Length: 232
Image: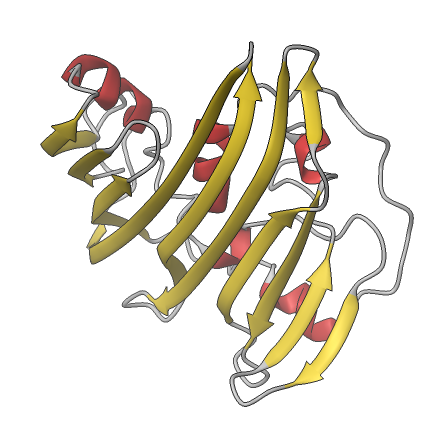
């Protein structure tokens, strides 16, 4: 769910960068970020907790097998944000069920890949990530990030990942982002593919002279297999 966190927090980005140069990609790294052919979808429960400037607690359920506009169900809302219609609309925009997978966090590396070797939990790779989709409006933002991921050397499944902003960044003249730190934990779904079970995001910025900060914990649980959605 790294892409979801970036969409929520940093929608100000927009420039498109030049394509990455050709490079040698470690086989384990390439396999880890290559989604399997399976198209199995899962419904799931989620919780978002924010103890930043605007504390909030939102819980609900996503079922990607339902028609668009009916996939997100909000069950609990606490905090300053109380407009259920707006909250539901925000989660509906990210209700395809495709962005929960750890192997879809990035489409590759924009530059050299650092192989830090084996650890007790797996192999660690460091890299500047490319966005999940080449035409993403967040491509400029991704160029400012450094990411690391822990990969199981036997299964090539991603076990955990992190990403951080390398230096303060100005997406537009009136705004400046000082900090983005994300740490995610991956857990196996019923089919063995790993999904982002927990994502911790710390964000600090300023806009029009106003300081903004957020500390968000996003969790996903209770994955249940569902059928592919039928298009109208």
